Image (cartoon, rainbow, N blue to C red):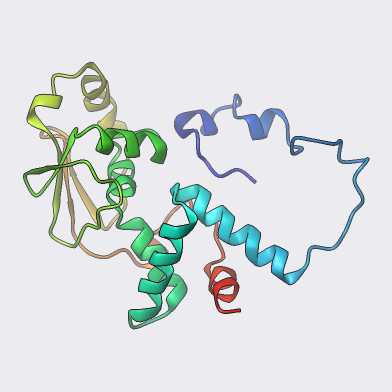
Length: 195
């Protein structure tokens, strides 16, 4: 399944899933066809969510425990928590082509949260927070290229982008309908952890 992990490349014919639709390993004709079990479906859905957001198992489990404590549906809360991570917000604002690249941009200290430099990709943002490129990093060649391409990118409804200042603002917490491009069945993830 196409998870859009490679940024812009996934939207072109060069995407590896487009070029080779079969998974790596033994040819599909040599494999026996088995019906996937309930556990297998739940596990693959959880792994898909983990890989999309680039989160390790321990962090993912912590996010799930937090989602269970919040009022409302656990699956939607989990996706909301994952969307409000700093690296994901930088990706959604268009300051990076992929979540891995956004994680690296944050790790290297190129991003500020409410005016303070932060290098923690898992930092949680709240409505009203302002995420911006650090003033010293704006002269960087990468951010010059990004500032030219930002006008062509669209941001989700729950975010607000200022292309001139290379900054964005979180207007509200995202709802399930606002989370675009994520084809994860969060109910199966909840079932997996509820065993």
